[in-house]
Image 1 (tube, rainbow over the protein chains, first blue to last red):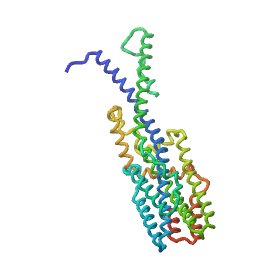
Image 2 (spheres, each protein chain N blue to C red):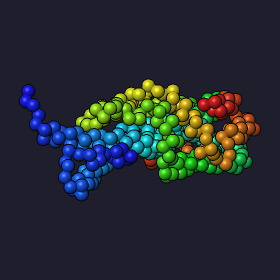
Image 3 (tube, rainbow over the protein chains, first blue to last red):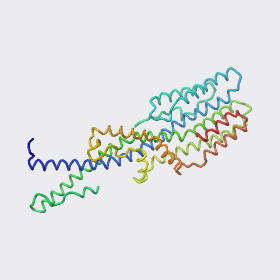
Image 4 (spheres, rainbow over the protein chains, first blue to last red):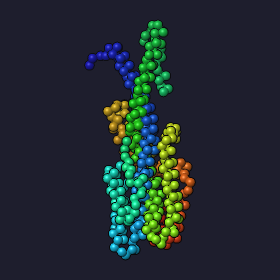
Amino acid sequence: MALLSPSDDLFDSILMADDRFHVEGYREGFEEGTRQGMIEGRNHGRLHGAKLSAEVSFYHGFALTWKYLLQNSEDVKARKRLKAVESLDGLIQKFPYEDPQYENLQEDMERVRAKFRQVCSLLNVAVDFREYVSGSAGMAF
Amino acid sequence: MSWVKALPSSDDVFDEDVDEISLHNKEWRCNMEKRAKDGYRDGMDAGKEASLQIGFNLGYREGAVQMKTIGQLKGIVSALQCWCRSQPSRISELSLITELLRRVDQHEQDLVEAMRKAQERPPPSVSEVAGDLEDLGVDRSGDREGSGCCGKDGDSDGCRKDGEMECCAQDKDQSRSSVRMCSSSFFQTSESLEQLLQSCVELVAEMGLPEELTFHIQQLRYA
């Protein structure tokens, strides 16, 4: 191995200092960036989770209530309606909508919405819950 | 950045004109400050990138849990409203239901509005969130002794994965912190959820509707 000349040595230490300052700055920046990113992400995510959950929970309450209202009815029409309502309830129960990392979140959401529209038409209810039916939310940045 | 000032001062190898030395020192310090600032900016970007999605996922769960009960209650009262409209004998009860629905709707809007305000508010000071970051285990992951993986751009991916894993492993801590969030005065609304549930239970009983429905609404209190 060749010995380093003094000038090489000096050059090395300059480079090292250069690197050290960058790393020190990086460390401080990383800490602050993590802090800010966590807060921004959390606030943003909270709104998304709230919107989706409010919508699904609405359908859930709606379906359950109709189930209780229809289940003692005898006529044929009611039985058909009950079946649709129970199927909507079943879809929602299997849907882990509280998990932002669930891979079929969007697909399942669309399925639930479609089922809800079908239920509404069977019940002769006007779908004036447009605030829900139109929006679809992104799950990532 | 106090450490920038801790630079080696004029006891150099060069024993020449002092002015020249101080000039060199100035230039050196200026360069190093620039290096540190560049590093800070790079670190800031990497830190944000590493934490945004983790924060999003945490917030998403909190938001989803928080809207569950009020969302269901709104669905229940809406269904009652639709049902009453289709029953000629129930028309007189419609105004009671519509009034309850308005209150439930207001409560829901208040909750969302509080979240939106929180989003617009500037981030709190370091000390306030330090606890949260500790809970999540995402602070400076792997960044030790300057030779950690975060020192090099190519490895910043590895850092993020580390952070996520730690985050998932501490799910319990997350829910603890979310409870703390929800119980703070942050999300106060004009009327309590408890009152709304009670009003709904009373209405269902008054209308002589199935007991299962009453039971279900009562269960929502503990959801």
